[in-house]
Structure formats: structure tokens, C-alpha cells
Length: 283
Length: 298
Image (cartoon, rainbow over all chains, first blue to last red):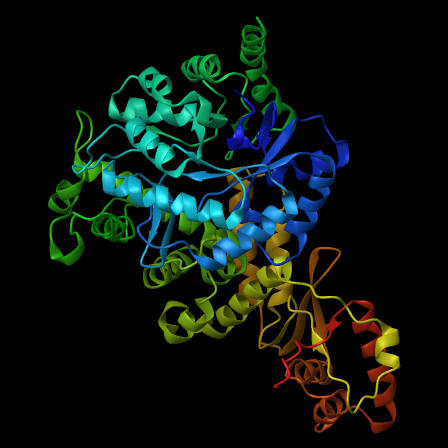
């Protein structure tokens, strides 16, 4: 199950997000790391240092692309320049699959650069699925959609978030990048049981899992990616792995970034759960 | 409510300016109270009102784009100081929301905007404009396109009356009224340190303000380029700048040189040596490439 058509039939293990403060360490020390996830937009440039760094990383490591501004849920059509640049990058990285968020963030050509929540309606699910299909057909690689953390819900919503995710995934026939930290954050902000969410997703569609830390405020939780993963999120991860098998796992750490070794060590905690899942699958 | 209508409604609130204290404004779009506006489409929960939930996104939007703006423009920040820089950032970003999938292009319209709104920089308008042009050129040089560079042999074998060259797309040529290259390098040098106590930051800020205050007008010509993936600012002689500008405009080499030396004070007998040196350096730096071919008409 972990290697499936939504992740190009790969078994990638545990990776971390490629971030600028670690470039020097990675390029000079060449640490062992199963794979790196890059933010596509950071490398959708015409030349210069970003692509030079990327090419050196690609010489040594497996890389998967993760986007932050495709905005599958925006009501407007995909930006053609964005798609062309993304396809150029896909050819460069040979990423076996590509992910972006199940959210919106632009309207009338103006970009918020945020991951804004979807109204969970059938109209939105249909439109989003159509856009996912268009993007996948243009890029010609498997696409996975990631559930986002959210801080607001809409009056017009007709279903739960996981029902909406499932609706989109089924209609688009795409993969899921299951972010268990985002599920935890949203469950606290919207008072639902996060295990209901994890138990409801179609396990055979999960291409990849994200883990991360967050920040707790008095009345809500923010998805800040600036801490280690907390125990309740590891428990959700364990349940997800139990259902999905040892799927490619990635730790995101985007702010107050510690050393490469510290980030990698935190990510490798996932191996404990992955090993049990592999054992269970073998029995 | 359609998806598009809902997204327009939310975006209008999310992208609306914050109050000076960093909160969401009480007045919503179209003159309606923001509490009523938010309540129309966002559910409250047992801890947060609709207004408070929307405010989280409103704040995040501004924190993100203000951070990105400041990260791209440390030189302009040094020129204007905290208060004026903050005012420029908020006014510019309110009028010019991002129209690109990447934050890299956030400041692309700042020079034009600043020219239209001179009151924001006040007496430092010319200095601020020079700095904005340099900082945008810095971004372009960092990740701009590089084409196959022409070699010295290509140039040596060519007929200067017929040969047309152009410069690498990542190179910017700037005629500036202030030596802002020195100031920007000093500012960036300060920022490169890992040591950041409050006392140190205060001293650093005072140093920047003093450096800016000392900066006197002095026309300079600059090529912002890159070598081995690092950006450099190269000072040019006026004639050197004119030759390069002429080439970029598509003039043949001989015409670009003639035009550059028309009002030159460089003695006629020394010009050939200068020209030879310049072309040697430029081609060694890989600055030249062939212009785009225009498709032949059938």
C-alpha cells in the first residue's frame, strides 16, 4: 500500500524539507537522508543560485516537489505561466509525484500567499477536482492534495473537512498528502476528534504524510512549523501509518530552524512507527 | 453564495490594511461594520467570534507580505528609517497586492509607485529611488536567466560593424545619483552576523542611520551582475556604461562605441586601449550573448 500509483510506486522512507539554512551543511557534509522535499516556488526561477543549489542536491539525493500556490480551490483558472514553470521544474527534478494544498489563496489575479480554507460544498469539491485533473494532465505526473490547518469555518459548508477531502480525491482520482499535524491543529480549532479524520481518509490514496510542530495560543493553535512534533501528533501519525502502511513521511520545519542534525533526528523518530507498520505488513 | 463570491468577500477582508496596533479594522469593505461582514460568511465557535477568526487571516496576510518586503529591501529600510519604511510598505502593498504566484516579484512595481508618491520618502526621494533600483537589480541578478555566453574568440572573429550582441538577462545597468552600492553592502554585511542582542541591534541601527546621513550625492554607473552564482556590483566609467547600454539596445558594436565616446573626456589616443580592456573583461565575465532571433517572415 505505501508504494502506490499516487506516489509513483516509490518507497521513500523519512525525509525533511530542504531549507536554505541547511544548504551548506548538506552540500559539504553530504549527510545520509532518505529524501528532501522542496518548495517548488523557490526554484521556479530562470537561473542563478537557486537552480545551481538544486542541481547539486539532485546529484546526491531524491527530491519531491511540494507547492504552496497552485491553489486548487481558487475559483479562477490555473495560471498558465505558473504551470509552464512548474512543468520545467518537474522535468528537472524528475519528482515521482507532486503535491500542493487543498485550499485557495488567489482571486481576480491577486495573491494572498496564504493557504485559505475551503467552504466544504459540493460546488467547491467539483471545481477543485476539475482543477486538480487539469494540473495533473498538464504536468503528466501523479498529484497529491494536502489538507491544510484552518482557523475559520464557513456557514455555507455542507460536509466535514474529511468528507470534502474524500469528495475531491474521488472526483479527481488523485492522491492525498495527509498532514497529521494540520489535522491536529484544525481539530483543536474546530473541536472535532482528529482520529475521526484519520480513520475516514481512503488509505490507498495516501501518497505521503507530513508531520510538523505548531504554536499554541490561548484560544487557538497556529500551524507555525517552528517546534518539534508533539505526542498527540505522533499518536495520529501512528494511527495513519497503521492504516496506510509505511508511507513516505516528511518533517516540515520552517521557522526558528535548528541545525540539520536536530531536524533530521526529529524526523527519524517516525522510523519507530514505520518499522512496526512494515512488520505488521510482513506478518 | 457562489465559490467565487465567497472568495472575493473573504479576500477583501484578509487583504484590508490592519490598524496601527496590528488588529483588524472595525470598518469592513463597502462601509459595513467588519463584525457584520465577517458574520455573514464565517461561523463563530465557542472561543472566537467570526471577526476574531477572520482577523487571524488578516494578520497573517500582512505579517507575511511585510516580512517579505522588508527582507527584499534592507537598503531602503536603512535609507528611510523604521517609521517611513513602514509607511511605504503598507501604502505600496495596499495599492499593489501581489499578482504573482511568488513573493519574489512583490517589489517589482515599487520604483514606479515611489515616483508617483514622492511624499513618502520626502527629502530622501532620490536616494530612496536609487536604492530601490539597486535592490530590484540585486534580485534580478540573483535568479535571472543566463544564456550561453559568447567567448572572446566569437568576438575577435566578428565584424564590429555587423555584429550585434546583447547582455545576459540577469545583468542590470544603472545610472545612479548616489553611491548606494556601498551603503547596501554595508547594510548586508551587518545583517550577515548571527549575533543579534538588542543592544547590538540598536548599535547597528544607529550605525546605518549615520552611514545614510553621511551619504552625499555622487553620480555612479553600475553593472549589477553575478559571478559563480554570487551577485556583485561593478562600478563602470560613463563611457563603459554607454557602450553596454547601446549594445543592450541592439546597436552594432561600432555604433555603440561611437555614441559612447561622443562627449568623452578620455583622450582619443587612449580610447582603443580602454575599449580593448573593457571587452576583454566583459567577455571574461560572460556578459555577452546573442540577441533573440526574430523569426524570418515567409
